[in-house]
Amino acid sequence: MSTTVTQQIEPEILKSRIERFRQVESEIVQQVRRVIVGQQEVLEQVMIALFVGGHCLITGLPGTAKTLLVRTMAQTLGLVFKRIQFTPDLMPSDITGTDIIEEDPKSGHRTWTFVQGPIFGNVLLADEINRTPPKTQSALLEAMQERACTVRGHNYMLPSPFFVLATQNPIELEGTYPLPEAQLDRFLFNTVLDYLNADEELKVVDLTTVTTIPTADPVTNAEEILDFQQLVRMVPIGESVARHAVDMVRATRPRDEAAPDFVQKYVNYGASVRAAQFLVLSAKARALMKGRYHVTYEDVRALYIPVLRHRILLNFHAESDRMKQDDILKKLLEWKGAPRD
Image (cartoon, rainbow, N blue to C red; front, top):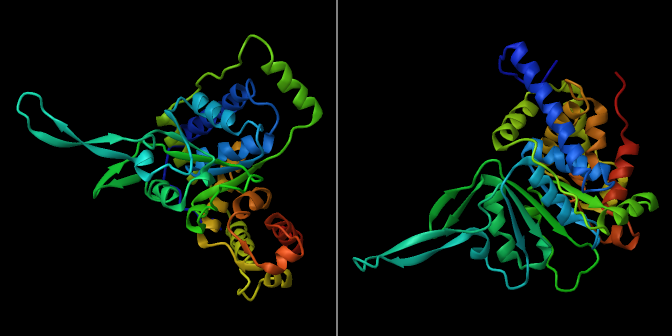
């Protein structure tokens, strides 16, 4: 039994759309690989976020190509790229834009004119998002959820598609502000970039210390990306797989009767319903990218940690025992295995 109601589309048309999706996905990887070395899981997660229409928080050490990855993805997708460097003195109007008074030189009549901020793009790089106060961070909340922003009581729709790809540094805590839980919950993934291995690092050195600079060419456009987002939502998921995703999310809540002992001991607050929605959506995109027409348990479990790691809040017991979110989520995957078909 499927939990998805799929609209009726001619098989040939649907087949053509799926073939185009896979062609574009392959070409995106090929173009990005001209600039970015390694980070296979990270690239997959960012692409899933784009195909789902979600936002991505990229956590990584300095020099791990976080900004370069986002810029390269925007170039490859043929979308309008905007960047905001978050600083302690950044104001909400620096993100959304503001109204200014303009005077007509002939009549002398003054009118309010809205000047768009950098949020009016397709791909917004929020660089070092945790370096600005919560008041400014909250300027992104409405945009991330509603794809719109409100300035002086006027509502402005943002262009479609719209993605926020935010970066943050996990080690420099001085002068940073933790992201509010409500904003963290809007991110589909918390993607972690780690160091490359020795061979990959050598390849980076070879690519970046010569006279030529590698670039990526656009392979698609905004209209196609929106079509792919609809195509992903049409991927069927069996009721047992969807229930497994929901059960895995509910297991992170210490007050749930099904939660294991270690969750009740270490977790203050578990993941919300939005986590289950995002887990299923991202699993659908992964299935399509892997050449399948339905979601499997493997899709759900492969994306469980990046979807959930920023949605659970640990307590002082976890801190004293040096338990991190990833440790809890790995234990949950071991505690509850995938059901047998």
